[in-house]
Every structure is written in structure tokens, then in C-alpha cells.
Length: 165
Image (cartoon, rainbow, N blue to C red):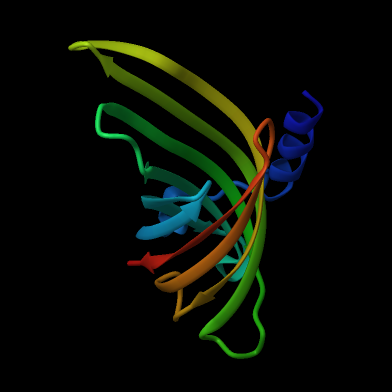
């Protein structure tokens, strides 16, 4: 509960200055993610707002492709909702950013034994995300890379790189 209140407090400041829908640009992106010793493919939705679009709300979905045994069906995905703040270094094409948000990860594993499928593992975890990264490009479009610490039951480090268009 303390983590949730901390994240809500951090997100409230930038969001209290609301803007009209016409003031908020929307950018989509695709990315590759490496975390939990698994490769994942992701999609993201980015909403820019604030002074010079320095604040961004980022919704991110990642589906992981773990190495599994032949008779095992495994599904592993996560959803992230982050708020980031970027900084201008004087070079318009390079913008470092940092942020925080919420993470929800789900894993299910089904094993086939003697021709019958049996669920052996089913877990959903919520966590807090802290992230840093670099955006390379003009405006909100371009390449990006980020490192994200997911702090919860299974604390881990996740690295993501992709394209926003």
C-alpha cells in the first residue's frame, strides 16, 4: 500500500495540470525487451504533455518467449503504466529521461502428461517500476533505449530498445 501511495503522489503533480485532447500528441512504438532471461516483444502508447512535451505517460505491453520443454505451454506477459520526464541536453536529438510507474506481470504454465493437459503454475504479480533511458530523434518519434528496475515480489532488471513512430 505504501508503494501505491508513493507512485500515486509522484504521478499526481504533472497530471493535475490537465490539457485538452488536441494538446496531447499520441505516439506508438514497438520494442524488444530482455528480462528474466527471456526475450520479449512489446508495443507502447505514448502521450506527451507539459512544457515542451517533457512529461510522457507511457503504456507498454510485453509478451515474452521463454525457452520451454516440448510438452509445456507457457504464457508470460507484462503490462506497464509509467510516467517519464525527459531533459534537454542542448542537442535536440538526444534526450535522457527517467520515470516511475506500475507493473503487472502474469505467468501461466500448462504441462501435458499422458495426453492430458494440467495447469501447474499460474501467478500474477504487481510491482513498482523505476526507469532511466535515452531518446534519440526529433520530437517524440525516433529510437529509444531504457533500463527498468521492477521492484516487487520478483525484483528484476529489464532492458528495452525500440522505435517510436
